[in-house]
Amino acid sequence: MANEKVLVIEDDSDIRELIKYNLAREGYNVSEEVDGERGLEKARSEPFDLILLDLMLPNVSGLEICKALKRGEPGLAAVPIIMVTAKGEESDIVIGLELGADDYIVKPFSPRVLLARIRAVLRRKQASPSAAIDQIIKIDKLEIHEGKREVRIDRKPVELTFTEYQIIHFLASRPGWVFTRYQIVDAVKGADYPVTDRSVDVQIVGLRKKLGPYGKYIETIRGVGYRFSEQGESSES
Image 1: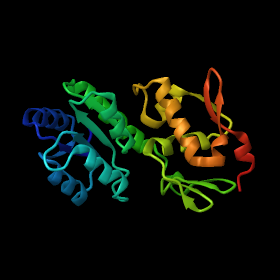
Image 2: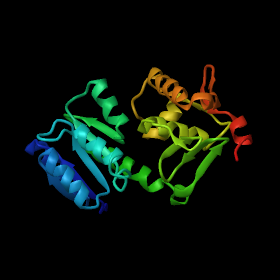
Image 3: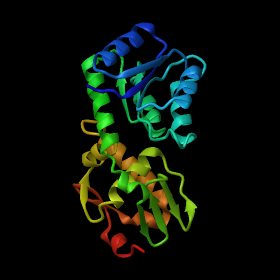
């Protein structure tokens, strides 16, 4: 059975108890908080393997918590976050994912689906090879640092969203390989993640723009998807 530590930040007592009951039954070690401020403090004070985070919280919103942990707390950025929210609008979901959330589930939900999502996210975390932590992909003056989750051009950091970094790292790690949009999404967010062709295209457009002259290394393969140019591989320093 599972023994991972999960922090549940949820102000609805019925939903919180439902989550706690089902996770505890599966062997997870569950902690809970009822408002955003106390939840953020809890996440900072104790090590957790995963955080289940409601978006609509008192004092500090779930989106603010996600941003604080993923972008302002280097030691906590690797902790997976699953958003549990009644807000099913695409814009809210996209904001959360761009802040670094690993997945989301919309209320009302099936406990079995929630458990499946948790297991999938934890599997992806465990599957990340520790040997790659110091890997640096170099193409001329472009550097992609896995451990720091950082992209630099001529030693200057490039401000990328969480998803943009995931995409450039995934493609650049496999130069010359062609991937469909859905393969890219599966690699970045996990299998069966809901997405449209257009959303991937928008991410690529934004990424190319931020990479400047290095954006040309991300090639469009008409009717298929994208690849990172093998020319980039040959010019690797």
